[in-house]
Every structure is written in structure tokens, then in C-alpha cells.
Amino acid sequence: MTVSLLGAADVRRLAAELDVTPTKKLGQNFVVDANTVRKIVQAAEVRPSERVVEIGPGLGSLTLAILETGASVTAVEIDHRLAERLPQTALDRGVSEGALTVVDADAMRVTELPGEPTVLVANLPYNVSVPVLLHFLETFPYLQRGVVMVQAEVAERLAAKPGSKIYGTPSVKAAWYGPWKLRGTVSRQVFWPVPNVDSLLVGFHRDPEPRGTEQERIRTFAIVDAAFNQRRKMLRQALSGLFGSSAEATAALEAAGVAPTARGEDLTVEDYHRIARVGA
Image 1 (cartoon, rainbow, N blue to C red):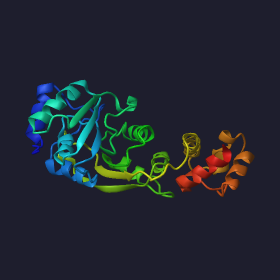
Image 2 (cartoon, rainbow, N blue to C red):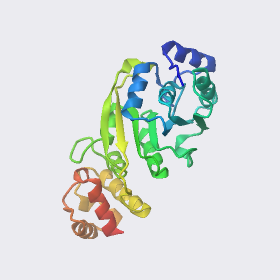
Image 3 (cartoon, helix red, strand yellow):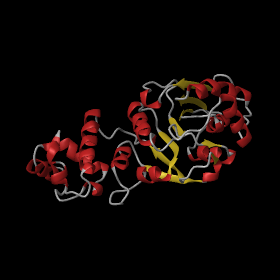
Image 4 (spheres, rainbow, N blue to C red):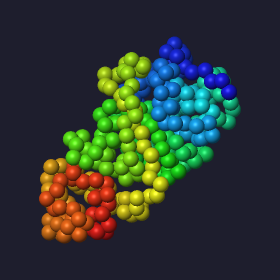
């Protein structure tokens, strides 16, 4: 199967045909460079036999690069016009019938994915990137790895380590599922329209075994939220509301082997999980 990728002129032509004006609300900065979409696919290590889920395929630039490898794609698109046009674009560019399945829906509301894809690839806008990623990791345990292109600030936060200034709730919650690493830079010039922020690639690999039960995850995330809602406060204070009092929070922290005077930004996901197990 020989797949022809989209260039800048193709993207603009499709946008004009569909009367699509890129909007900040939907984060529609379309990629117009073939080398960039191939770089994303390569970073995700997509193999011919795999099924990939792509969130927000837009006009199909990245979709075609995934399909070019011989993998099959389940694409989730919120814009009805784009979702309706994408299968025809794929056929026009040499994609075999059956290789692409389009789900016309809001990614945050999707609870089933055709084909149970094991790889996630996406170009995600700033305002929904973290919620969408966490939703997919929580909802689809068969997703084993992935690479997403997001605003640099988001990528750095997802990959941040304890003690760094940008370490926060997204860092801990993402780490619940497995390690995250920065996977490369993306030039602003490969987008149409050109954004006023930098983008990075960030990738994850899910841990071989779940870190804990669903109840433990919910409890851990509640503790993370409480700790970072009062950033720079000692944990015995930040968690007092959750545990009932500063004294009870202190007892739980000590039982988990965490200093009550520590701050939330210094703890690993393992630390938070231990606190959750003690306080459950």
C-alpha cells in the first residue's frame, strides 16, 4: 500500500472545501509538513500489524502518516465535518478500505474504541490535552504506549520529576500509569496557522502491571489534588481536610513513611500511593 501524505497546499484545499477556519477553541493548528508527521509516527514506534488510536485527526495529516506504516487507525474526531471527510481523504490518498475507522465524538465522552488499539498518537490542543490523556489511560487499559504532540509547557509538566518547579498534579497522575519522557521538538513553522507557542513530543509506556486498584487510584488522585491545591504547604496541613485533622494526616503520613513536613511537590507517585493505602 502506497499512501500519499498531505502537503501545505492539500491541507489548505481541504480546509477551504469544508469551510473550516482553524479555531483556538478546538486547538486547530493543522500540521502541513510530511517530515514532521513521520517523525511523530517514528517516535511512537508504530508497527505494521498494530492498531493505533488517534485523537483529533483533523484533516488527516498525521492519520495518513500512521496508515503509511501499514498500521490500522481508529480516529476520534469531535468536528463532524472533519470526521465525515476523513475516510474519503484516506481512500483518495491510497489507504486500503478497512484500515481506518472514524469515531465522530468528543474524546472526553468516548468509552469504547473499535479494535482495542494498543498505541495512542495525537496532536492535542493545550486546553484539553491533560484531561483527554488521563481519560484515555483510565478508560482503555489496553493502550500500552503512545506519543503526543502538545504545547511545550504541557509536555514538560507531564514528564516532570519530583522537586522540579513544574512538577504538579498532571505529572503525578500521568506517572500512575507509567513513565513519561520528552521525545523531541517540533518547529512552529510546520503548523497552519503558525502558533505563538512551542510544541514538544512526549511519550509514555504503560507499566506491565497496574499500580493499584481503581479504588486506590481514586484515593491517590484525591490526595494528589489536596496536596497541590495548597502548594508549598506542609503535607500535614495540606491533607488535614482530607483526613479530618492535622493530627490524623500526620499519623497517616508517618505510617506511609512520608515526613509530615514534606511538601506535595517533593513526593513521587509511589509515595502518594502509600499514603492512599494507609488512609483508605
